[in-house]
Amino acid sequence: MANGFSKEERVAFLEMCKGFEDSLVLSRRISKYQTDQTMMERTGNTIWRPMPYILNSYDGLDQTGNFDDVVQLSVPATLGYSKSTPWTMSATELRDALQNNRLGVAARQRLASDINTRIMTTACYQGTIFIKRSGAASGFDDVAAIDTACNRMGVPLNGEVSAFYSSADYNSMASNLATRDNLTAGITSEAFRRAYVGEVASIETFKSDTALRLTAATATSVTVNGANQYWVPKATQTAVTGEVSNVDNRTMDLAITVGGNTVKVGDAFTIAGVNEVHHITKEDTGQPKTFRITEIVSGAGGTGTVRISPAIVSATGGSRAEIQYQNVTAAPADGAAITFLNTVAGYMNPFFHSDALELLPGRYEVETSAGVATMRATLENGIGVLMTKWVDGFTLKNFYRVDAFWGTVNKQPEMSGIEMFSQT
Image 1 (cartoon, rainbow, N blue to C red):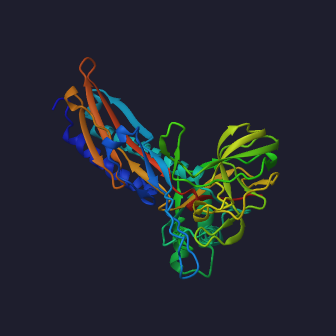
Image 2 (cartoon, rainbow, N blue to C red):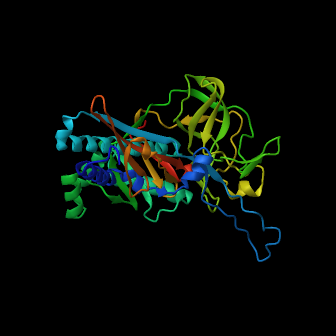
Image 3 (tube, rainbow, N blue to C red):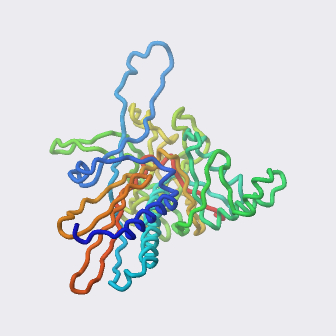
């Protein structure tokens, strides 16, 4: 084959892919869905993935009239991330095999960071459970707060909930464990020597070198503008033309009034009089429901509209779909006060159930008869890594690139969230 890879280059590529596996910690903790690449190309690289079911139950032996169609909700998932690390090497540089290998390692580190960062971003900005800690990270109680929040709303744990902390917050937890006298020697030693926390309160914890920060909310005197703002879940909608299409039920638009400053994407808040309910039993947990702003539709200050997640499903309308997916005790009243929770800038520490987030691996196809050499490998998480090479006959420069193509989706924002520390 023209422009074929040398044995050294093939070995370097295999070593690079092995290193990928070690770096992609985040992708191991979420679900994977293998897509048909031909179908994805024909659908604009978008596929609708089902949200977890929630079913109703009724009292009594006679269930006449209770046999309804189950409303299956779905969300759009897109192969939306395409990352490449390109570089060139001269004919003289190629004589140094070590140099070539170092560039492969650098390409791996960059792409692995891109993949982890995209998963982290999806988790941080689309997770809706917000845990506000007034002090610095200190250990067990911080992680146990995640366990409490998930159990309270009926999010299954089963050892499948993971939490990723910034280095600063994770090391603070390890410091607390390292100085405790009432733990086994093994736990305190690991915490002291390796700054290791591990599994706490049924939650698997990890230290992340990809930490995203959220600035403090600055808007003041924010209230709900208008009554009866709630969402009725529906699987599909019909356009005036008669065309039926799927509906994304994770968000809804909320009209608000802002007294001072502006709201922004990422802000977390509660609404007066709107409590969360257990996802299955629909019992009032006694805790305010937490929401996130995902988009500014119009007017970040004054009177405007924001897109929030999750949608407010209060069962106000009484439909079976509303009862099935009810997540709050009541729709907000007109003028209900909105209280922001991210009061101090800090790191967002995401946590999620493995079924909430999903990774969609993609792949590229390259025409090799055009004089381009290719090597490909499929990583443990399903993502295909493609390495291509070609040579410029005029300059004897060798052109390399390593590519990855994938997508991430948060199928259930109410099974994921963030924890922030030192919030007043």
